[in-house]
Image (tube, rainbow, N blue to C red; front, side, top):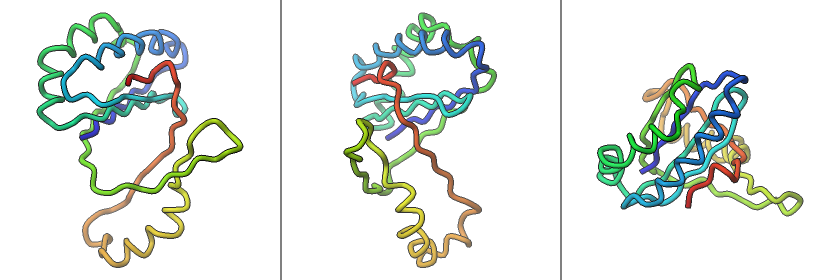
Length: 145
């Protein structure tokens, strides 16, 4: 299960938010935690954490979340925050671009080549209004493994 966190952070608070992000490295002590990564997308901090299951997240939230959040002192850094829990439905193939050191998702190719056919077959227009996605090149200092 994945936890996707988005925080709207005014430019004046970016440094303070990034410093606070270091405290979340303690998350790796939680049972069921797999990894966490993130970075900035304009004025939004985007953090993605992967967990073994929902029970692992619930246990973390009950035991470790508050002490880490108290140390991180990020609550006053952002103007809004959204948290979404995502269950993996399918994987999108990724590739490594040898001209850079960053991995790049095969997201644009997928949206242009494969998604239209899948959308047509599944009759998504009957079930959903739109599909959203974005690519975040991660900030290594935010990584927790």
